[in-house]
Length: 199
Image (cartoon, rainbow, N blue to C red):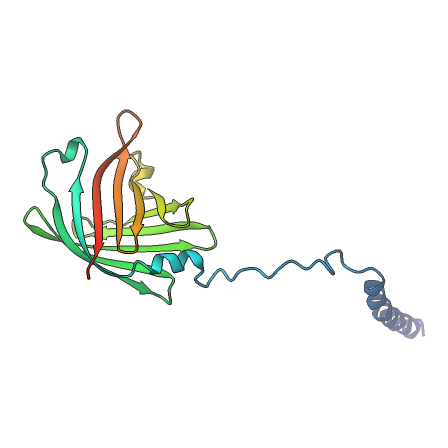
């Protein structure tokens, strides 16, 4: 008999709570009601940064110059590059072939902008190495000039990090300058590659 009364009392309490909780919510609106935040940008979709990069797609001639003390007296080398938009406008894929010191050097570079980290990203690889160089970069002018720094294992082991400046000159021309920190602690360029769109 006591158990039956307890069960009935528990059931009545449940019904009471089901009736009271919605009423409580109506009497006390959430602080964010009426002040809803604007919907967040979809981080998976291309945006303005990617759209700017995709304008560089096309076929280019390349001129590679070694600068600084290490490049003194070295002639420029030439090559070609094909830049394609891949993965639905999210990334640029560059495929290059150059004639360097009498031999052919092939390279791949992948460029993009990470919406989540709000940083540019680049991966570099070529046939003179079995390693990939991963770099992250920032820009203060909407992607016209991007300053990249490497994040490779070699840098973690104490080697000077690789820097790259990606500078758009026009819709048909851009320059990539590679540099490292010199003995004086200053950034020292050692290679400059000029891209000119084929017409």
